[in-house]
Length: 200
Length: 200
DNA sequence: TTGCTAACCGGAACGGCGTTCCGTATCGTC
DNA sequence: GACGATACGGAACGCCGTTCCGGTTAGCAA
Image (cartoon, rainbow over all chains, first blue to last red; front, side):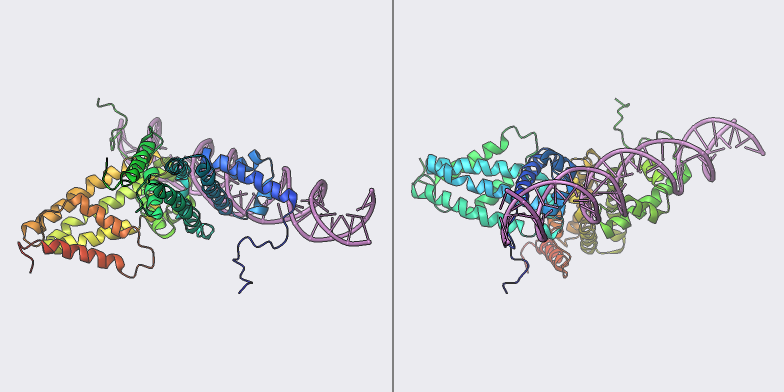
């Protein structure tokens, strides 16, 4: 049972320092290249930006899809981890609003990815559930705090809101003109609305 | 005004007979390869099946996307053109039902295409409107005939129904088990329902 | 500190792809 | 039947993802 090879993050043996450095450099470089040129960008462009050889990339990410999935996880983490500091320095409802905007920005850079997600490559299988596992609790905490402070209504399902913001953001093309931002603002106003027993 | 280079189907000069033969062979071969291996199948696979050289393909379809778009149009035409013969040999409501099943089959083979559609390639820009232009009138005629015969209700918008059947069909995976067929049958029963002023 | 070895590194090389090029063959016309 | 325009096939080109391997380095033990 514990020899299941699908166990993730098992520290089979310590990663050497130079290897860890390569991995970090590659993830950063890949993230930049993907946002600029999309996930179909040539691998050599990534290795060039990272200043490593192709062999190094493939040592750590045996398939191209492994790299894409790793970058995705990395960015999901960064977005989810941005919440606590917002909570620390804002009113609950403002922390919620700012995080949703941050989240929308995250989704907006994922246009090319949705095609990859449906490509059937098993490297992507765990991504949707990872997305949920990280974001639902974060948004749930933000919603709870704002609701407890009486700043928004309390009948919102984090999963629903996550999906709504995601859907709002995805169809937007590059000629956005702030449309997404306006829609999210509207959504947040909608949340505020129910905070009082009777609307103002 | 009439020298707009976007005019489609302008007979700049007669197509030579051998050229037309090549085009037809290529469209047929490409359609087969696409349904078996998806739209990302290697070009050489198509030229091999068609028994032509790569040069011939690129003479008639300068970009890969041009071939995909042409196959799509070709299949849209085939599906739309199937309606009249159904009308000729069936009760109106049966013609409608059979054509919707035909249409569902058409959509079912277009899974890989939806990604291509959103790739931003200008060759695909006219495809959605072509889809509408061909299918809405066909379905509209079928609905009218069945409604006039008192076999279905008369308040159905062809565009809505087209979209509904499309949505019903697209999410289905390969482990379909007749689900799509059952859903379409249900939809047609729904159409029948309103045919009488009061339901049976 | 030194020496050893497993792990890691860079980049040339490989096979496959989409696309182009051009000498040859074919069509339609005079 | 001959001629010019057009189309044909397939070798060739450049790019890509991926693999391979000789040289390098980190981490540990003595």
